[in-house]
Image (cartoon, rainbow, N blue to C red):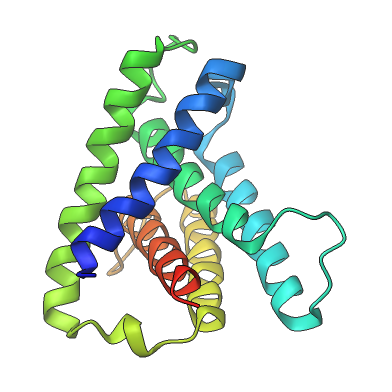
Length: 178
């Protein structure tokens, strides 16, 4: 299967989870600041790394579930970056899904450009390396957040969220191939 087809399949699976959780919980996540979503991403990525290193999974949720959560938390964080000024916490499901589609499409377009330039190097990477890259990006975002969003030369917070989202999709593609 071609990368764009695999990517689309993963995103549709993540979107389905996002849609179901939106039906269950509404958009309660809108109360979170982007920095809280960054911390949630850290928890998920750290759990993946711990399971990868120890082989123990006492909670029972799979690594796949956690990578899907990373995709969805990245989309939520991107929404919060652009819509944090609005007091509208509860979004209608249709609007929330439209925003999801917009940001996941932007991530997809970025992936295609980078995937072309890097020659699909991610295909030769280990899932554990993708986990480490996500953790590194999280730490970068936390530093940028601590610096009030200011960078001297580096990409902004949004670019890091897009990269984490794409790394998580790549990990899910790898995991589906085993």
